Image (cartoon, rainbow, N blue to C red; front, side, top):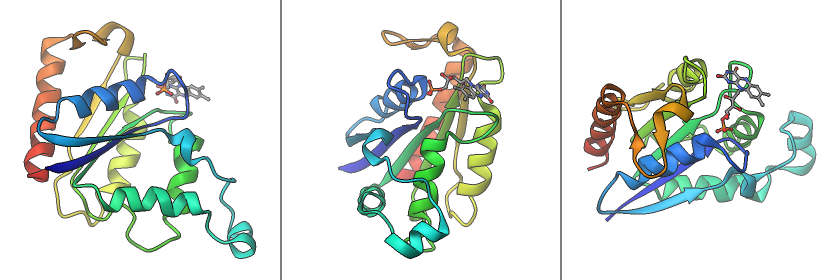
Length: 178
Ligand SMILES: Cc1cc2nc3c(=O)[nH]c(=O)nc-3n(C[C@H](O)[C@H](O)[C@H](O)COP(=O)(O)O)c2cc1C
């Protein structure tokens, strides 16, 4: 069975992106599901001086090892001031220091949501542009606007057109994984 790792790129306990990542993972059938919480990987703020003095934290290696064993990775990005949350960026910076390859060229599905009309599209573009570089797979993206209006735990994505868009992106991810 394929192993799929998913997380919301947010440290918020009630993160809507964690919810979207969990939902997306639940839609991938016949696979082993691993959901990560970024709070379990909190590390000192990256600095070149700290790296020189103290080395790379063990948690960065642990995070990277989990990615390495995955057959597919799902990330839903929260947008803070038009960019990654500090929680995600710090992990990204640390794991990028271990070796050149960060996401192991795995099949990935990148999502984002917010309660605004733009659905955190800006951070999704930033993430896609960075993460798709050199990855042999076409990496699907999906942004869910107005999360509170468009999503419930019971029914998932409510709007039919948006749901279709999600399904299309999801099926590309699944075919990349298989
Ligand atoms: C510091 C901060 C900056 C934010 N900046 C943005 C932003 O640039 N764009 C946006 O759509 N929402 C922004 N928001 C609102 C977030 O989209 C909202 O908090 C959302 O719930 C974050 O996702 P999460 O629940 O998964 O953490 C910001 C929120 C915070 C706390």
